[in-house]
Length: 167
Image 1 (tube, rainbow, N blue to C red):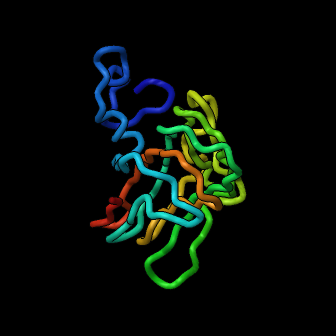
Image 2: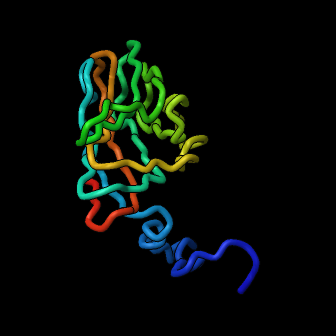
Image 3: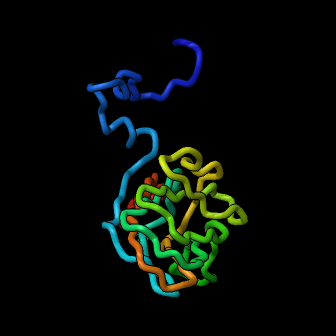
């Protein structure tokens, strides 16, 4: 055994050049679920993903702007609305997404008091530094205004309970 981090079942060769193996990403981050490109919610919330069957660990959630966001203030955040009793909880603080360009990437830190992160070309942001453990319910996108623009969202998760899924 060499020095450094060893991930069982993961080969460094799986991430090299033309021999990239997409299953390597799944081994690192879990199961990938994509939501098709869609319009922003209009002064409300919309469901991005639904969690069912048990708890999940979320190491990464990303949004990508696919159609320019209208130039108008729009405080935006992600939330979790549990199926059982309990109030909707913020997964991050708001970020004004006014005029965000195509290709802007959104992510969260995992600390609810940190704002939704945005960057062009993924310069900062990325992995959730405090991975989320979420119980059954919905992951929501909350927009304070009615802006034009579209984004697509992707979440990676690891089931913590047998039968737990994200759709």
